[in-house]
Image (tube, rainbow, N blue to C red; front, side, top):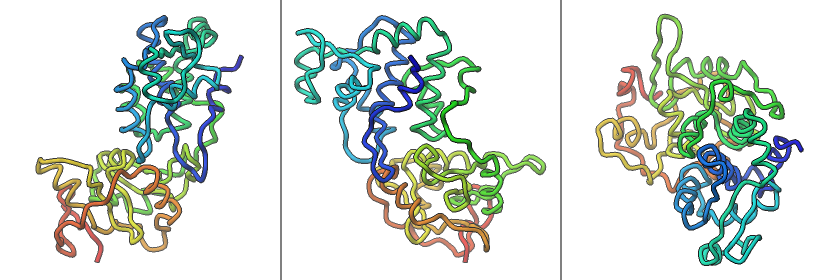
Length: 314
C-alpha cells in the first residue's frame, strides 16, 4: 500500500482555496504521539484541548472543532476510533465523543508500516507539511506536535509536490529593493542580504504561484507573523494588524502595532503589486479577526524603527 499517496489524497473540504487543515493537524499530532509511544491510543477527552489549540493556532480563522477530524479521518483508512462499546466512532458530536470514551489511533496497517520502514514517519510528516502549511511554520509545527525528525528526514522533498520556481526569492527581493515591505529592514553581511525572505501571500500549498504578484519581501519576524495571521494586506495596499494580537513591550508596539494602516514599502515602479485575488485569499484564510484602526499618523518619510531607512513612501 502506498501510504504517501493515500495521505496525499485526504478527503477535505475544498472550495475556492478554502483551508481545511483539520485532518493534517490530527495526523501530525498522532505521528508525534506514535513516535513517543507506538502502541498508545489517543482518548478524545485527553487530547481535545491539545487539538483545539493546534486548530486555533494553525487552522483557519473561523471557529472549528477537533471532533470533526477525530471522526471523519476514519474514512481515509489511516485512523481508527473505538469507544467503550467497541469499534467505530460515535460521530462528530463532542458530547458523544466524550461520554463514550472515544479513543483514536493510527490504523493498524499504517502502524505496522511505520515500524517496518523507519524513514516513513519523516516522509509522511514532510508531505503533510508541504501540502498544507507554508515553510515558515514547519519547524514550530513539528515542535508543537512533539515530532523529532532526523536531519535527512527534515530535508526530504516530497515526490508528489509540484516544482517550485527557484527564481521566486530573487525576483521578489529585487522588486522590493531588498527591503522588508512592512518595516523597511534591509540588513546585509557584505553584499549578501540577511533576514530577508520572499513570502507567498496565497500559500504555495494552496495554489499560490511563484511570481512577484503573489510575493512580499519581508524580514524573518514579519514573515512569520504574516503567515500566522497577525498581519494582512488591505485593498489599498496598507498593512493590516489583527486586533487579536496583544503585546505590551516597546518592541511589540513598534514592530507590530504601530504598523497598522501604513502603506507597504514597494514594490518599485515597473514591478507588480500584490494581486487582489491573493490579498483576498489571505484575508479570508489566514488573517485572524478584525484589523486594528490605523496607528497615529507617522511622518511622511520618518525613519523605520528597525532600519533607520524611510518607513513609508511619499
